[in-house]
Structure formats: structure tokens, C-alpha cells
Length: 187
Length: 222
Ligand SMILES: [Zn+2]
Image (cartoon, rainbow over all chains, first blue to last red; front, side, top):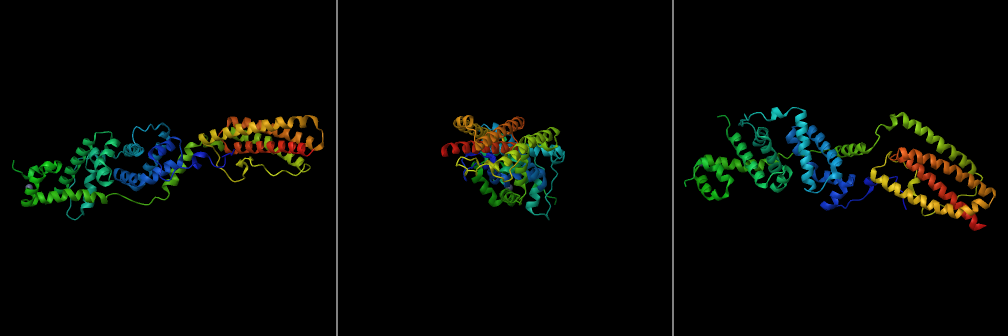
């Protein structure tokens, strides 16, 4: 019989180095910090990048990723496994990003009518970055998740809770819109 | 159907049209440029993935998670806590002081048995237990109390019949420990997550267990 007072168990309990989805979900439900740390290691780079593109600054992206992890942690006990953990945390992150956008009242600016014109002296990367801001919300989201962060349509569909075909069609719309913006450069 | 420049977007969405589109691209520079741009958008998009080091981010998240779990984050600001702490000092320090005094005249302590709890380590510990850790601690405490009850039962005949100075000493020590345990348990009941209270309680149980073993060891020697 050993008293575990020195090390509160959720911090001390072990998680396999490569946990299965079920093991990870169970550890999250039990509130094991190691499980959240594992999720952080796997997903934080993409999460930060996505938040950066939605919010426009690294500092805001970091704050929002932190907020998302706290929400994941608070809600983990009730995670029912209807979706995969990664789907679930991206969904939470996206909601946090929208909350942050609303808080800063940037939504109006971001949703401004597309008046982007590609300039001959900027690289395609910079032009694309600017053009992205002129897309509508769903087009930008699918484009960021698929083209920038490399998620599959099946994953995006699960995160956004839409059919896979919808994800494909939103991406197509987004690319058409971007192509138009990038070719409509002033003469 | 003849493929025209206006059909290009439809062609990009639908691979069935692609062979015709390909033919058109050979002869139309405008569509060729658009098609190249279409592919470039995807390849350049990969470069938009933003990667930067954030060594402080996880520690900060972890700290925030831990802070949220502390049920009484501002416990040290509460007057009730100070009152409880003062009561605890009286309940623990005084009896332990008295006990230490009596220990000076008692026989040398036995080597702690294998079942001695590890909670008595004097290493600094976090202030609060999490829910799950608490459940484990309470389970261990129950096991501890059971073991003490068994030892008490075994030591009872010796304690009630013998009146040697050693046994008298141990009886006095056990009485002090019992009252300290009762006081500490009362404090723990209203502050179950406080790791220091739980550690103090574990220490008192350990002392009681050792004292009972001392009683039983005289028994064996006599
Ligand atoms: Zn053409």
C-alpha cells in the first residue's frame, strides 16, 4: 500500500508513448495532463498556424490555442467519442478563434467585400495571403484546413460537420475566387 | 461540344472534361496561365503554414490547467483558512512536541516496516490534490485505518494490563496521537483537497502505526 500524496495521480500516471485513440480519449476523460500534453505535441503546430491565419497575429494565435486547450480540458470528462479527438479539438479551436474575432470586432473588417487586386511587385505568396482575407468564412476555413494545413476532406467534413462533398465544393469555390482575385490585377 | 475559355473553371472541377480542356490549353495562352495559377495556388498555399517556436506555451497551458483544478485558488487569503491553520498548529505541533519530549525517554525506534507509507517524505509537495488523487488518497487512508485497527486490537490486551513505564509512555503517546488525528481529520473534512493537511494526517497515522508496533514488540520480547 503506497500513499501517492507526493505526486497527484493525474500528473503521475503513465500514458503509453504511442497511445491509441481509445487510450488517449480515456486518459483525457480522466483528466490526465499527460494526455493533453500528447494532444498538444501532435496538434499544436497546425492549431497555431490555423489560428494565426484566422486571427492575423502570432500572439493572438497562442492565446487562442491556450484557450482552446483549457476548453478541451474542461470538457474532456464529457467527451463521448462521437468524433475523433482531433476533430473535436479543431472544432473547439475554430470556435475559440471566432470568439476571439468577435471579441475584437474584427469580423466586419475581415468580411469586407473583396477588393483585392494582385500587384505586380508582390510575390504570389504575399498576394495569396492577402487574397485569403477577402474570401468568405467557409471558403477561407476549408482552404486553410485543406491547402495550408493539409487535412483531408473527410477530416474537414467532420470538423465543420458538413458532408464531404460540401467540403470539396467549398474548396473549389475558394480556389476559383482566389484565382479570379489573383488574375484581376490592374493593367 | 466545343471547349471555350469560359469552360475552364468547370473543367477544373470536373475531371471528365479534362481531356478536352487539355486540348484547349495547348492553343490558349490565357487559359494556360490560369491553369498554371490554379496549380500554383495549391503549392504556394503549403508555404503559408506558419511555424514558430513557442517554448513557453505548453508550460503556460499546463499551469492554467492546474490553476483551474485548484478548488480554492485564493485559499491563503481567506480568514477561515487562517483560523483552521491556527487550530491545526495547536492540534499537531503541541501534541507532537509533547510526544517528542516523551520519545526522549522511550526505547529506540524500530526500523520502519515495509508498509510504512511514503507520504511522510519531507519533499515539497503541491498544495492541492486533484479529484482522482483524492479518491486514491481516501482509499489508502481507509486501508491505513484498517491496518491500525488490527494493530490496536492486538495491542489492546497489553495496553490494558501492563503498567510498565514504557507502556505508560506509549499509552500517553497514543492518546495524544488520537486527539491530533481527530483534530486533523476534522480539518481535512472541510478541506479535503489540501495536500498539506492530508500529508499531516498520513504522518500522524504513521506515528500511530509505529507506536502500536512498539507496543507489540515489547510484547514479543517480554
Ligand atoms: Zn482559353
